[in-house]
Length: 310
Image 1: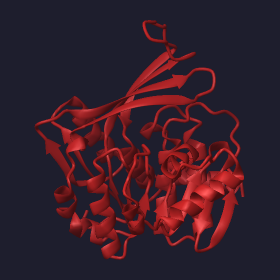
Image 2 (image 1 turned 90 degrees about the vertical axis):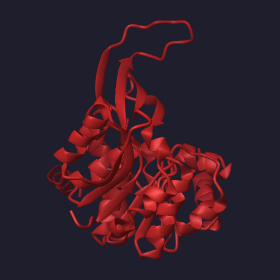
Image 3 (image 1 turned 120 degrees about the horizontal axis):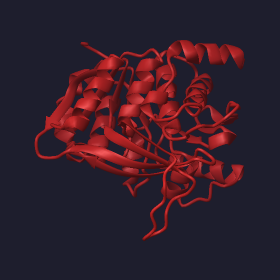
């Protein structure tokens, strides 16, 4: 692939998902109600979501020379993701994540070790400058070093590429990063961490979004779980409701599904509110299946869902 519509800088980790009624307390052992292993990592989930949603997609990351790295390559190959800037790191293993999934609610708790992707550098990003320059949308997060994320956002902006920062996990960062962002897409918890503003009410969420724009972002897009999403920026302030689903199986990766879908719709030239609706459809479909990358829907499934929920 000589160019991609969407370029994602981020991590791949092997997801080790355990289902149980609750988390154990220290010193306790619980019997589980299910286990699954598969491809994960925010960046990888987002690039797979974008590829399945119809975009030509490329990944920038590092993986180890091990079985989990081979899992990554197979996952990307199966969805046609460009891996020309996936580096093999001989000094570190591929990342992994422990995921607890509640058998009662489908909610999750996660511990992530980025592994080889923790060695991503600004130089690695600059080496992918030609790939980034040909993209329509560039996406990154905070699971890899922030210096690499900043360089990717800066480069993409310099080429006129739309930039999306999904600031997860939420970390203290210099405010200057936001000046490189067309969209900042935290969930409500991350938005509260980044701004110090309580986002548990609609008014608080609007104040947090406004703060992110004051810090330099062109638009703040806060996902609010079952309540939908909030967009605040040049086009004003808008709440977009979430789709209702019959049964939530697993919320792991829902945010990545949303970001991948939103990026695809923006790359296709859709207006932001329509792009949010598209991303919300991708997320709604993903939570009805177990797993992260395996739960990402195809474009045919997304279009059918939107027609049925028009």
